[in-house]
Length: 163
Length: 276
Image (cartoon, rainbow over all chains, first blue to last red):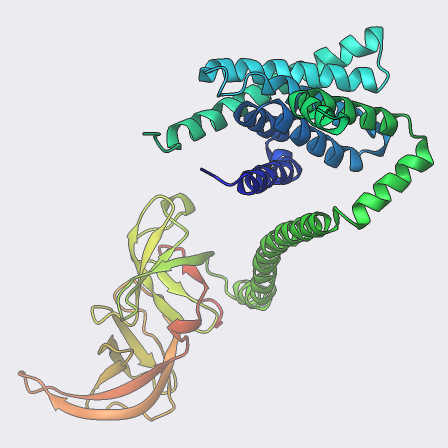
């Protein structure tokens, strides 16, 4: 059995790696303002693997890191990510054996919920809220789903077979 | 069960909910911060917890930028070098073209200036390719010269290019005469860049004499400068008993330095109206 500290370190490294990728690689593959959300893919993977509490703390850490670099949205990312992490954790692999397509569906819902909470926390209401959701979130969600599908497929293919 | 034990059990059972509440409260506290409070939070985080990552990321970005700048500078460097080379070549071409123009003005024959665009790949320079052809009124056997002297003749002519048979080709022969004494002979190549002029025994030829074309054979007009007698080589007798003297000739025009040349457009009567 793997030590819990090792798991925490590995998942921390995964989040940091995802953030680094978001800051570097994503700039090159961005289609205008439409960018995939790599950290959210990492958060989804962690929450589905480790459950609600781990998802909650991972989301909180991820959101706080993102908030540090966006002073105007301080707390909004943290709130959105921790709620998403917590919610995704209920679909933990140990509890629900999800198919790859289901994981993608969960990722898509997570994106919508994350951005919905984020916009609400930012004070967007009515037309602004829906406009931001349609113009920003939906295209980015599609792009993120494509990238997420590739990543999930890659890890599913090369994951060692459990005996 | 005391109170502490009861609290511990509650925490274990409801740890998720408590954690969630804690995080949500923390987020709400952060969200309710005013601008100075947010700035303080940002500065504290960046200067402590985030410093190693911040430093790493900045370093990575700087390295990446330097790499791209370097790539761009390399590309610009190559482009500028190439441009510089072209400009240098153009500048070097100016005096040559001026000399060619002066030469053309002095000679009344029809001269067609052309550029040497290729030469045969062999060790010996026997053939060049000129960028003029039939479309430029060129034809086989037209003489090719420079302002210095004879170079060869057109051996093959295509629509837009021609082959020049150079004087260094052993198959190339031209009748020549000594400018001073008018003694006539034959100039031919012995390969390896050696030119030899053969005269009948008793011809008045001295080292240092200038050789010009004799105008016999109809290929070259009379009076084209060819070279200078540089040394006497031998005296030989052929099968008919005719004795000839051979002299080494140093051509006026070295083949290594020619980039442009003139083709003499052939007229019915070859007459060189003015010496180049």
